[in-house]
Length: 149
Image: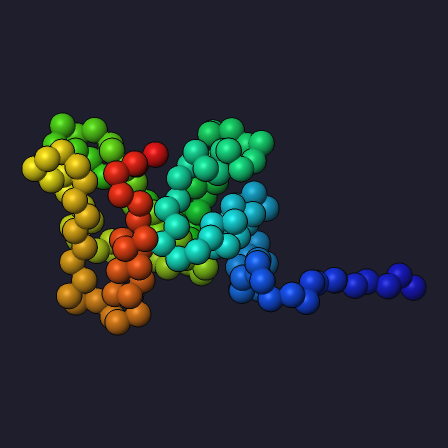
């Protein structure tokens, strides 16, 4: 009889909690599960950048784009373009969830171009639950200023 064991480290540093439901969601490809787990391991307010994911793996941009589409279609990820006054995409706002959130609605307005040509982040959170308000505040408070790469 074969013995089967799953071994886990016992330390507390450098760990994060992950739902078994997410880890075992058969609707997700193994690639999407891995990317989602990577994103969920980041601290609150961490900015999702496609280039970071490309730099952190051997996968090219087309693979990451396909994984993003999968996560969006299954409601684990929501992305919204931020455009300047000329209609050019200058940034993305991305929300990641550890379980599907089919009813998620972006707070409006997300952001707009200020008079001096830099992004002015505006989040209307008046009619939002307390926990969600804190999450939105943390997201924008930790957002790096200036560099949009």
